[in-house]
Amino acid sequence: MIQFEYVKPSTQKAAVNAVAKNANAQFIAGGTNLVDLMKRGVTAPQKLVDINGLPLKEIKKTPGHLYIGALALNSVVAGNNLVLQHQPLLAQALASGASPQLRNMATVGGNIMQRTRCSYFYDTVLPCNKREPGTGCSAIEGYNRMHAIFGSSLSCIAVHPSDMCVALATLEAVVMVSGPGGDRRIPFADFHRLPGETPHIDNNLQKGELIVAIEIPDNNLAKNIHYLKVRDRASYAFALVSVAAALQINNGTIEKARLAMGGVAHKPWRLFEAEKMLVGKEATMEHFKAAATLAMTGAKAFEHNTFKLKMAPNSIMEALRVAAGLEV
Amino acid sequence: MDHLIFPTNENELAYESRRDFLKQSTMLTALVLTPAAILKAGENDENIASALEKLPLTLEVNGITHKLAVEPRVTLLDLLREQLHLTGTKKGCDHGQCGACTVHVNGARINSCLTLAIMQNGQKITTIEGLARGEQLHPMQEAFIKHDGFQCGYCTPGQIMSAVACINEGHANNRDEVREFMSGNICRCGAYPNIVDAILEVKQGGKKI
Image (cartoon, rainbow over all chains, first blue to last red; front, side, top):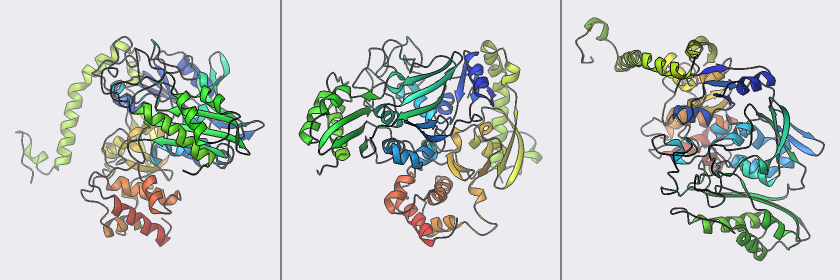
C-alpha cells in the first residue's frame, strides 16, 4: 500500500475542511472497501481523514422519519428494534449483504459510497474508464456476467454492488450531507449516477461533502415487504439480481407499490413504471407478471449476462409474491 | 538445524528459525526498496516527512496493553503478526473474502486485514492466542478438536474466533443459522459439517464463552 497521511478530526467541520482542501484526501469510515482498493492500487489517497471520532452513530425515530447516523454499523442497523419495527425491508437487505465480520465494520455512509466490484475496475493492468478515464472499458468485450442490463453506456457497464442501497431506493430515503458550502439533503434516486461518459464519478456528492445521516420518511411499508437476493452461493456473494419490494395492500388491492433492483445497473434501479402500473390493481401473480414485463423495457444484455433478462423479471415476480403473502 | 544458504555469520544465524530468517530477508528487501519508494512519493507529495511518520498507538491485545508506533498503512493483521508476533491470526486472501484473519475488537468479530491498525487506537483486541486459559483450552477449541472441525488448519483460528462471536451474538440457534452466520469464513478443506457440529455443541452446552 502506498504511504499516506492519516488524521482523525474530532469535529465534523474539521473533517470536511481536511478533505475539501486537499484534492487527494478521502474520508475513511469502516474501510472495508477503501482499504481493499488501496491495497490493490486502484486508489491511492495522499491523505485519509478518519471520521470515526465524529458522533454519527445515532439511530432514532423523529416525527415523520427514521433517522440513521452515517457511522451506524451495518450489523447494528440490521438488528436495531426501531429499524425492524418501522423499516424491516432495510434490515432484510442489510442482513443479506457481505459477512458478519464485514457488517461489523461497514457503516451506512460507507455502504452508500462503495465502489463497483467489476473485476476490470480492480485489475490495474487492464483498461477501465472508471479507474482511469479515457482508457476504455474492458468489460464490454470481456467477461461481463456480473454486469449491467439497464442504464449502461459505451464507457462503462459496471453495477453498484450494494444491497442496502436497493432497499433505501425503494424506501425513498434522503441522504443528508454536510460540506464546505453547508448542509443539503439529496433524495436517494438522485444520489448515485448512471455512467454516461464520466463513469469515474459514482455519485453527485461535491468535493468535501460528507454523508452525516440518512432519513427514511414514514411510509406504512412495514408489512408487505421482501428483499430477494439471487447469487452464486447461498450467502456471502454479490447479487446477480436483487429486488426490494414493498407494497401497501388494502383488502387485496395494492394502494402503494415501491420497487427497486440491484445488480442490474450503475445505481440502484427504481422500477417507477411498474410501481405506477400496480397501484389500484389486485395483488395477483397475473398483475405481478405484467409489472415485471413492463420493468424490463429497455433492458440490454451483453455476451455473458443474457440470463439476467430472464432472471430479473422472475425475481421481480417472486419478490412481489412473497411481499404480498401469496402461495406458490 | 537449518542449513545456511549464504556464507554469513554462522553463529548468529545457526539457531534462527526459518520464520526469523524470512523476516530478515524481508527487512533487507525493504531497505533496498525504500529509497525508490521515497523518490516516487516525492514526485507527488511534498509532505514526505509527514507521510513517512510513524504514529503512536495503544492497543490492548489479549489483556496486555501495548504502546506502539505504526505507519498508518499497516493493517491490524500485519501489526499483530509482524510486530506483536501473534501469528495465530492468519493471512489468507488479505482482501476480506476468506475470514482467516478474524479477530474480536471489543468483543465484535471483524476482518483484521481490512482495518488499519491506527484506526483501532485504544481498542481491546482478542486473537486466537487470547482464548485459552493457560493450558486449559477454550470450549470452542476443544469442540473443534472433538468434532474434527479442520483438516489443514489454516482457516481454523478465524473459524474459532468467528464461532465464539456467532454464539455470543445469538446467531447459533440452529444448523441453518450457524451456516448463514459462519459464511464469512471459508474452509477450502470443506470441514463445514464438523465446524457446525462443534459450534452447536458449545451452544447447547450453555457455558458462557
